[in-house]
Image 1 (tube, rainbow, N blue to C red):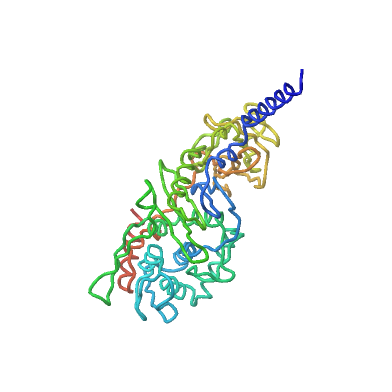
Image 2: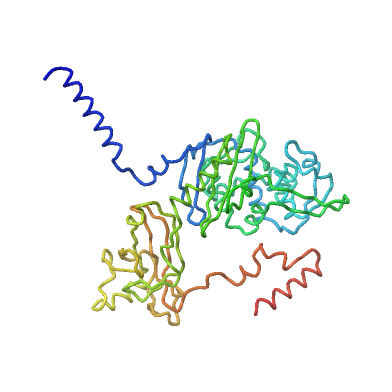
Length: 440
């Protein structure tokens, strides 16, 4: 055997090893992330229902975010003020640099209409006027923005103004913006505004009304698109947050500094819908097998290929429920710490890990008078491998709390227009209508 033959065999062996390594499977998330790329400096994709980050590239890197700032501006305004109140344009808002609604000094407009101008046309004058109206001053409003960021645990975010013009100490990250927007999309007023393609607003100072067309082209380019916000400055360059809903699943995509954002967002959203469909894991009112218990709410989570087999469920009972279940040990087995049970209708097995909190009462677990827990008996902890992904409360049958409070339904901000309060007489009439409607 000569040297040429050895060299040829060595090369063939090396090539074979490379091919074999290429066929070795890697984790689902890593494999999927390699199948997509963007032109962005940073990008993220999140499932709105669960809050799960499905894709991230430099997701925690603090960056300039331009008018994506206005996502927080709108959210803080909606949560801290009456959207039917009148906003007056002051000298700080009038003729504000950058994108504008061209509001007049002293002009008044409802907060809700101004929020449309803020999010559809990215008016910096609207952002400043809203900030002064809600926060008392721009600085006061910025304090509220940063307090909200802290509440949402946005660790790579800090605001210096409500409009997004480049400033020292003003930044966020792709992951933080994804989390913020997913949270905001649960607010019906915010959700309605960012999904609007065109809006007409009253203009009492001219013969014509304001007519605003949304700058977010995704609403016209992508099937199912329903938000959210564009942004640009000379330093931040093109920034975009978009959202879309298909088959009951809503996703939010974020790109920062991306010269091909429309196409990249279409690819990101397609990637999420195709590879991480939302799956219902628990139904509300579902019986827990082996126990006289039912689940208190539904739970859904986006799962990639092969991930469903890695789901683990644990049933953790409070002390009161354990005491009641231990009385039936002869028939069902003890629910003490470490014992194994089967739970759920056709779901994966759940392990009862014993009591965590709760106190024993004479009422037991039968929902009788004196039950200080109102039927609450514990939680099902859902895990993907060793990572907790959610919790579902369990109750005594017949003691499930209502899915939504009637007060939330009647006084939800989304239905505020049904109960106008422009003056005291109108407010009184709205209160009477709501009172009688509540009893229906």
